[in-house]
Length: 301
Image 1 (cartoon, one colour):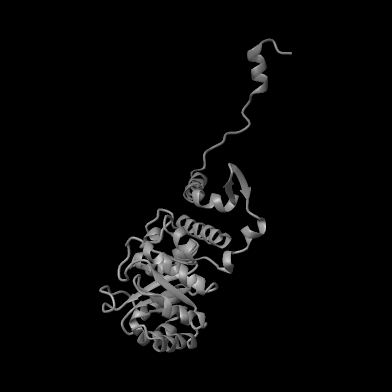
Image 2 (cartoon, rainbow, N blue to C red):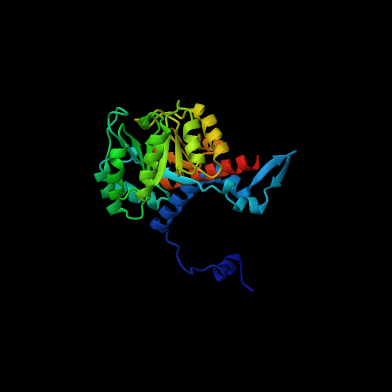
């Protein structure tokens, strides 16, 4: 027993130690929490896998959650057109560390489009600085064939040329795609927003292409708004080529990627949405989650 309340308190309370705030731990937690907040709305639907049905929640089958929709892998490829052009090697390393699958490299000749960008020598330098990087080269060039061998020597992994640059000629496109593949690179064809898909779809159906890029802006410059008019084209191509990699590029961000993926795109190119984000890793995670969700919904429907 104690004589009074102060005596009892004094007997119970004593200093065992002092907790001192750790600024480094706080900063690490704050960064992780900021990333969580940015990804929450996109990932909650994937994690919970819930749908509303008569006011009740209905869970997706576990197997459906784990199995990729249509057996397609979502690929997120930040576009180096939106990167710091004076520090590209560092930007490539940063994107890989932040979860990018590929790096999208826009090569423009100033003729096919007004803009003039990098060429094979810069691609070669990037490859030496980041040997594990998958460099996805999109040629907005009038004479794409002249760049194929130099890009192969530079270490490019995939080369996309424009259907319009070969005048929509299937024989020319087939020969160029074959040349690209013979040099151990993936072969792809790009379509401007207004270009019909039928001729390219026929080549893809025949197994002569690894990917088709459906541009959702006019080629030449970054920062343009997404054009929903390309969605029927993507859907038509997906209907004809269920296993083909279909790439979408132009105005793709957390708000537009779902519509593109629901139509059938599984390879996502994003420039400003990633390089302009305060947290590139979170931005990439959101794009991936939204695309996976949309592909799953499309496959389910």
